Image (cartoon, rainbow, N blue to C red; front, top):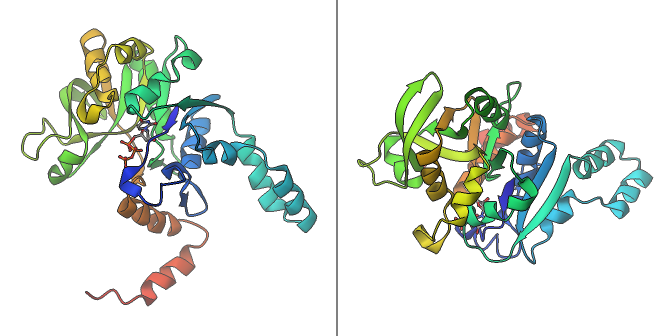
Length: 284
Ligand code: UTP
């Protein structure tokens, strides 16, 4: 499940008419990386939660017969193949969130489609790359399967940055796996229970839906996924996994700029980008 119905206020005015999830990273919309990661992790049914009246995400994954014909006429077979591949990726269902009541509420919108099965939540503005290795979502699925417990993606952050994240209080840690006692949303620097931050990948037990239904509005008047995960810990073990891979935060203007530069330096255009950066006057 990919929640993509937020207002994206940190990225206004770019996100006034379009969701941040369709802003491009190098050559494709942010959300496409997460869809590709889900498919590479063996997920066959994808649910994208979108906000009513904003159809750009749905349009991106739909077929585009006029464009396809035009590319075919021009003989641009490589681009035609790429465009067709997008609309043929997995089975994508779209669910509407009519009111922006928070991430927890967006997840709840997919309850009937998910049913009584464990499921993954991917926040696509956290772009997770692990070239040549196991996709991050697959790593969490493997942990869920091995330990029969909800598993969330963790990464160590600089202690000065803890107030930007949900931070976990570990019970114990074995290698990359951490059993979690508690989760504190955006703690003050110096009050964080650890430096292990929750990032945008979760594999959750369907029990979370019952808890989301009884979760009242928390910080910012929103139904918080974090609050429901904290409630889940009372009933079932919840694990965190320090995943193998690189994360880019593409949900803010500066994060998106940095992600574009870093990913362009890994792309086919790397030589030209490197030469361009070298040509800039980088003195203060
Ligand atoms: P964020 O906390 O990043 O919120 O949501 P946002 O609205 O997207 O962005 P800012 O903070 O205002 O700049 C985390 C994820 O949850 C989705 C977002 O689309 C994003 O993928 N979300 C959030 C929803 O789908 N619905 C909501 O009501 C809130």
